[in-house]
Length: 174
View: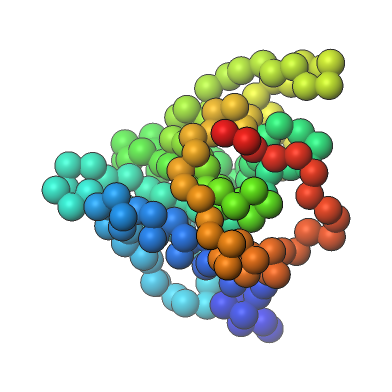
């Protein structure tokens, strides 16, 4: 059985979390890192609190570029449902951060904003978001807030860990 920490996807995810942690710390937000068992996935990436303890939220980091042929990005529907459960039961805001090595940016938004229904015309067709396909929920890049840039060295490390087997096309310009 593979060691979870040795998986390429885990290494890439850890690097994305490092990038977001660095950003949050620079904004006087403390990201608490869960370590229940270092060889399994954790329930969420970070519980974050402002230094003055007046703002608490969960940060979920998705280390992946946007889709090539659509103006969106997303993640597993199962994870979305888990985040919604936490948000609804505990009243804790969920922030989704996308670390995109294709354009060297971190972008994202509150889950409550990302799930606001919207129609976007793309290549002459109306796309209704949030969009669910093949157990993935997609959100429009239009709803993303530019968080920070990724330096070239870290971006290259992310690209070296990419598991995509095709070239990137398109992307978020915000």
